Length: 204
Image (tube, rainbow, N blue to C red; front, side, top):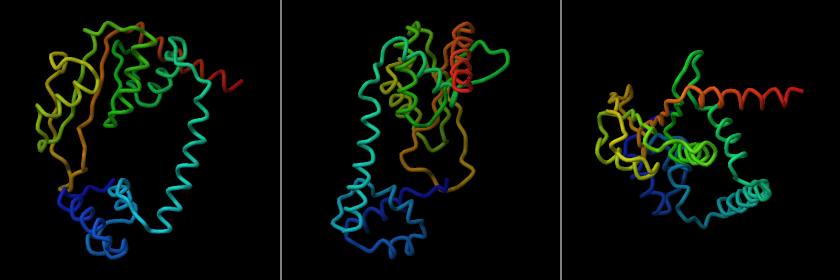
């Protein structure tokens, strides 16, 4: 992913709000069409093609909503869903006593944590958080953000890891990378066993 400055981001949105042509914006700011689209997705537009694509996108997403109508989120299904998410983003070591789920997407972290709480009823005081931040971040502000989002007290946060970005350009709205940890080797093995059983079930 290419990084861009906040100034470039704000210029792009300002030009878009003025009705400047997309081609001119991406040429002036030297950004891709995809980047501009991502930055300005929430801005209203009367462009015929844009409106048509928005209508198609809404129709396509509505089909996805239908898939969940009969899905019940209870303790049993939460265990399965949590295990599948863990399969994708969780710590995996041969001999591990720690459940660790890391990502920069707050919604993904919240989804896993909510499913984990419903499915396994963990002891809240054992939930720990490790943040990896850039040296440009406001440590207190980001810690408060994740604490509120995850409903985990700041007292249960480890000292964050601070890194210096390799590139000068920064991702906008990047709140660092968050890792939720829970030390329980038995529960870790249960998560692994669940997603392994799921895979075997599909392989039959």
